[in-house]
Image (cartoon, rainbow, N blue to C red; front, side):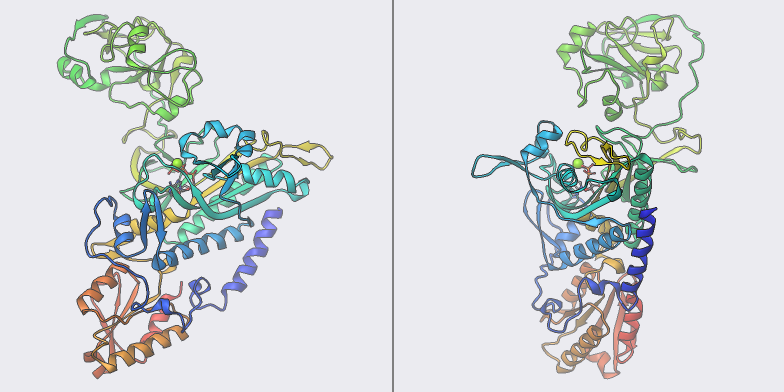
Length: 606
Ligand code: ATP
Ligand code: MG
């Protein structure tokens, strides 16, 4: 209830704030005549004609070519003036919507003391993504990869009563993660900006309300950025629980696979996606038979030899278990989902395959000839493998397979052994029976999930409830990749010539290109007048007043991608017109000098 009230109050305040503005971006960069950063002759805007080597995705190439960023070292980037303008607009939208949602902005240190991480138990667990440093007194610190510990520390010191709950803190701040493979420019960097938020609640109902509020807030943010996105069910890592959604910007370059139902509403990250359980196995119709397969070590080879589909075979993978190796049996055409597997109680987490020597010792045969019949170690069977009859499998004897194998008769199987451990594939039935699974690629730009008491308990955060009893709060956590979003926007908004900024994020509203200003007093004067008129109208304007060939200027204008462009040349000025072109349109039109800025301003309203 309190959240709702706060929300209404904030919305009202926000409406007041917005009302007088022509261009909502103006609050980020108030127009100023003095500002030299709006003239291209003085602005640091180093565009590149050629595609830089080692930039594999289009957003990385265009961010370098359009002079938005420069790399300092692997995964470390400097934001140049044009890029920073876009980044600030991304931040601005996020900040406005987070404020509307009732969250409170804070800013926590990047450098964090080891003691806090020792308290939560993560100092050891974090692995090498966390960069550890020592100060001059040899004390241990890290560069914050995330801020659960720090916010929980603030909470335990400063929040004491149930009356202060629910409370949601957020910051927009630098994170450092020593990623194994920094790549795709700012998409997977080592130092990057994240908006992270952390909420505290006395009960599940309160958490659920804030979770929904954050879900809606993320949707509003991405809609305001005009992105095509999808919220999908996501894996919760070690925390567990069902409340977890990732927000994916759809793009072929995305690192994640999203499984969604063709006709239903189901959508999940492949890491988590599940299909409808298959019907039970039919009755056996073949006898178990041993065959020699001296050269057939793969499912492909065995299927070819026997002229059967891979769907009639099973494969056996041996993985590290909590105590000893465990075999996982999958249908031959299916792939193991290591994230699902690592969550099974008998399997070691983090997930790892058993070593070959371990396999030989425990199974009595090499990979390529393994199977569930006469298996000497514990095994788990994926639901689709458990639904097979008369299947082919390795015989746990090098160079030998069985045909006509059947569960129960040849290989014991009880319900506790049947698991969901595979990646879904396109064409699978959706788990709710609504449609079939299809895939899309996505860039994860946000992740919201329940932390429960994973940090509040070990860090001993508590509040007094209304009966004066001490309670440990449950927490929610809501991340959004601020710098990654800039790249994601470009992935969805570009053509062969460069970027096409959506109006809410464009570094400037208008690009005025003066043709040969060095040669023409009339061009200089007219472009200067238009520039001043546009500034007075509240627009953000970039004036190309450089002494460059028109071809260079046009190519740069397309590359930089400002949505509206005016070309001021001697020929047009004779008729008191300028050329007007929208970035996404092919052809320019001529507009009268004295009307053009009003037209531009009308288009620039968000
Ligand atoms: P990923 O699976 O991409 O590594 P994550 O699960 O580690 O992401 P979170 O810890 O949930 O990410 O961080 C919140 C958000 O921060 C992510 O949704 C993503 O947008 C952004 N982010 C995470 N790692 C990076 C990175 N190395 N570079 C840029 N942005 C990142
Ligand atoms: Mg990560």
